[in-house]
Each structure stands twice: as C-alpha cells, then as structure tokens.
Length: 112
Length: 111
Image (cartoon, rainbow over all chains, first blue to last red; front, side, top):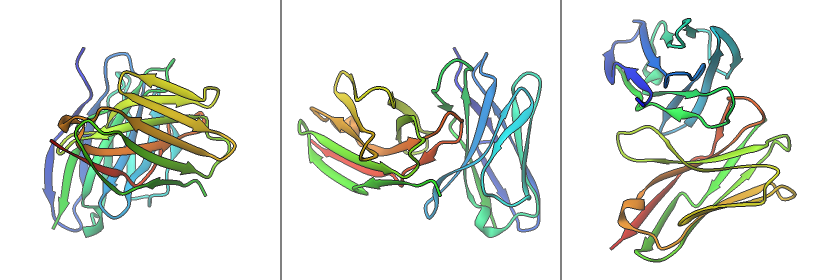
C-alpha cells in the first residue's frame, strides 16, 4: 500500500510569510503526528491529531498550528515565519491498534 | 523534563563487524522504544522496536536490548554491510504519539 505522502517536498519562503504543509497518512491510519528536524535541535515533537482532534502538543510557539480532516489528512501552518523555522518538517501516521509510527519523506522549508 | 541521550554521535566500523548504539531515557514511565534509520533525503524508517515488558528483541542482524532498571536501551547490528550506513535514532514514548528522540548516531560501514 502507498506510504505517507507530504507536499510540497521543498519550499522557500521569506521572513514574515506564512506556510501550509500537507500530510496524507497511510490509508486507515487515523493518528498523525508532526515533527521538526533541525541540525541543532534534532527531532522535536510538534503536535498529534487523532480523529480531527489535537491530542498532544509540543513546546512550540502559537505560530505553529495544525488541523486534521475527516479523511485523516493533516495540515500544519506556520505564521510569521522566522529564519529559525528553516527545517525538515516530518509527519508520521499510526494505526490505532499499534505503536508504530510511519514517517513521510518530509517537507524541506527554507526561510530567507 | 523528558530526555533521551544517545551515544556515540558517530561510529565507523569495517564491513562484517558489529555496531552498538546506546540510549538512556529519563522518564521512568516510558514504555515504548523504537529505533529509526534515516538515509539522506528520506524520512526516518522504523527498523525495530521494543516495549517495556520485553528485555530483548531480535530481527535477523538487528537486536535491541532494554534495561528498565538502568533506563538504558541499545541497538546491536551484526555483520554490518555498507548499506547499513545511515543516521540512527532511538526514541522513547509513554503511551502517546509523542516520541522523544535521541540526537542520532551517524554510522559509517567501510567495505
């Protein structure tokens, strides 16, 4: 079956702009989590959605937000972009009955 | 707060040798410990995982051991091959989808 897809794969924005990233988990996987990966901070948890509800949130400012749709697809939004938001943004889906999270290839965001 | 320490940060081995990566977690409530392999330009891929009610798990050349008392868990790769070269991450979680990741180990296997 198809894996986790993320769009776009690459994005270049300027400071102050906003961006929306999309994630489609594997069919049947209803939980979606988002992570930020940077060389300095490593992999950090942003938030997790299940059945369109945010169940858990990491220590990121309110500029980072997300949502999930009824088909389990998820989007994350970053407003008022800062240079430090440049990172690889990864999403991961999980089936309800297992612990395993399956990651997508990520969206590489560059803020100039 | 929750923290996972991972060592070493880089590891170079000769093809055929074994590689061991170690992690220590801080939250005693952690009960799920996955290991991920990340190749350049790709997302992390699960290679093996273990739950806290098991002390060891093996899958062909890969094994993971868990010491709950010491809050340590380790990844063992035997008979390493050049295609094992990648960055490996350990992680821990407590019944949630919030994975706390280690800082990663860059493994290089030389032919």
